[in-house]
Length: 158
Image (cartoon, rainbow, N blue to C red; front, side, top):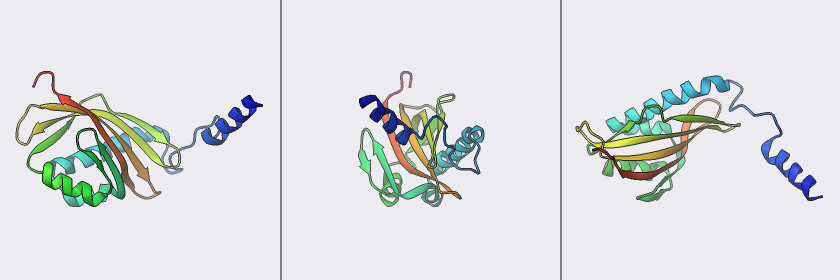
C-alpha cells in the first residue's frame, strides 16, 4: 500500500517519465543559447546601471535572496538597491565555463553559475560568488522571477 501511494505521488508530482518542455515554441536544445543571451543582456545592463533595461528583465514580483544582505521582495526594492549599492561602485564578471542551464517544465529555465565582482573601473575581481536565477517565460517574454546570490567570499588571488 505504501509503495503504491509513493508511486502515485511520484507520478503526480513528476509528470511521469516524459519530460515536459519549457514551452512548445522553445526546443530544449535551444535553451542554453537563449538563456546565455539573456544572461549577457542582464549583466550588461547591471554593469552599465541601465535601470530601464533591468526593469524590463525583472518581474514585478521578483524575489532576490542574498547571503550577505538578505531578501528583497520586489522589482522596485531591487532597482533601488542597485542604484544605491552597485551603480558606479561595482561591476560583475562571469567566470567562464561555470554557467549551467536547466529547463523548468511549463515555467522557464534555471540558470546556475559563478561570478566575481570588481570595483568599478578596476580590472581585478576582489570577491566571488555563486548565483541561481529562475527565468520565467510567459509565452512571449522572459523575466527573472527569483535570484539566489550566495557563497560570497574574497578572491583567492585579488
